[in-house]
Image 1 (cartoon, helix red, strand yellow):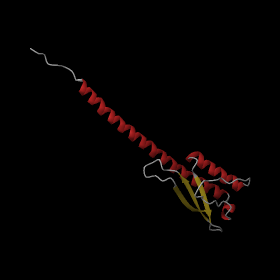
Image 2 (image 1 turned 60 degrees about the vertical axis):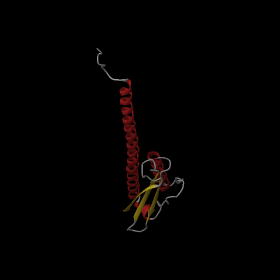
Image 3 (image 1 turned 180 degrees about the vertical axis):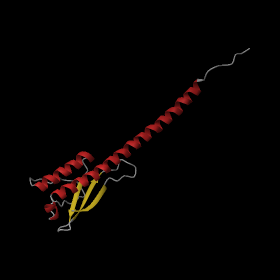
Image 4 (image 1 turned 120 degrees about the vertical axis):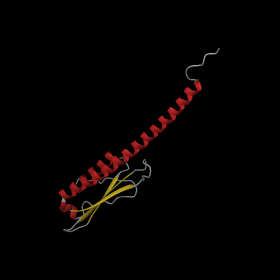
Length: 147
């Protein structure tokens, strides 16, 4: 009389390990997508914060802002921080430096202020958001505010 075999066969164990490995690869893929989305969210928040920081700087020096001294074109290519020793130039250079520190070397900013007593400013921040699905290599955040 034969006794029934107890336990599991090697094939069953290998199939179970394969199914587990595929599941773990899926979890790892979701984790990577989540990390990219979190980085994109961080950069968007940093862009908003940088724009509002520049608005505060403009409001602190409203006379120069209303005269157009802070105007800085947003270049289509490489971003070059203004050089110089005037207060406005150092403020703009510090702002561009902060953008690059928090959002990467491709980040750049631009300011366009109208002149006069009812001046308003458009602040633009551009960065590379191409790592996330549907992101752009030239993502831009713009805000307009009165001074």
